[in-house]
Length: 393
Image 1 (cartoon, rainbow, N blue to C red):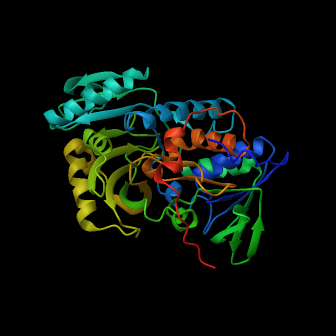
Image 2 (image 1 turned 90 degrees about the horizontal axis):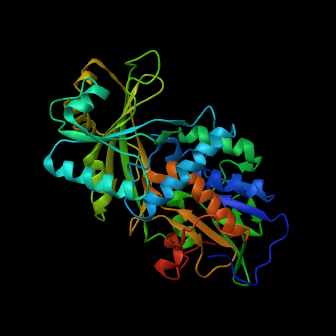
Image 3 (image 1 turned 45 degrees about the vertical axis):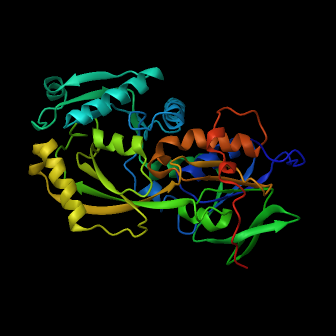
């Protein structure tokens, strides 16, 4: 869906993007490449939110079947193109994802996930416990079986944001929270900040939870805290494992998408530094960035049962990030249903790192009224109605 038919943009439109995370940076990249004049505003700094507190997984293996899995395939292809073009050649790299099951129920979850992946043409390799042990020596006896998805990848979110902003040449205004949208004759014509108003031909709101009151999503967006653990180095020569170990419980949580449900789902991610990143919780309704001993202990116990070799490592840091989900489990991307000149890109939850390239391209096409490269109509904000604004003046 594009802007209203009576909306004619200049050749080089001025676009304000509220939010300088990975989605905002990707939108800026595609817009600037098409000749738009782009300014990003962030309440803090680029990648200060979820993009800087993520595991960097560019994973199709972990996605909910349906549009999210299909879009992840497209986004991963764009990451590969960026790497081949030199834009992310030192940031994005391919690596497999290893799914593992500890119960018969989880074995069935992996089998269903494998069927959905194959339906999209994804390569998969089902593995017995013995076959998993050959590829990931040191796995615990509680792991029954698993699956290798060889074509996934990895890119640290804050590094992607920094590179895309550099390449785009977009102006970035740090520590500039947006107070409200500026309206004229029922159209969005800019934003109002503490430093004064800024005018634009188009405004894109990609500010995570901060998008809520600005665009009328305050009752639809929901925060989910994720606690993570970082160990010391297990290897001085790169990642200690060939790829991340992802629990089938993580897949089950995504496939069920129980509204308001909180859980812990184990992922053991080998970092290029030789350390491990262990996560994570899914705590609905929490906006703080505090970690707690109960959650950290639960994750560590599960991690040691799956990969006992972790007993040799020390925990050197714990931290938490805030993912922004939605009522129906799908991101919200597209034109505002009642306000011309306004576009929304939020609610990615834990999939923002992976999906950013395809969301960036799709939003740029909408803003510029260009032929759509990707069909993201299922994510249109209009599915929630008129989205009444509660703006402060």
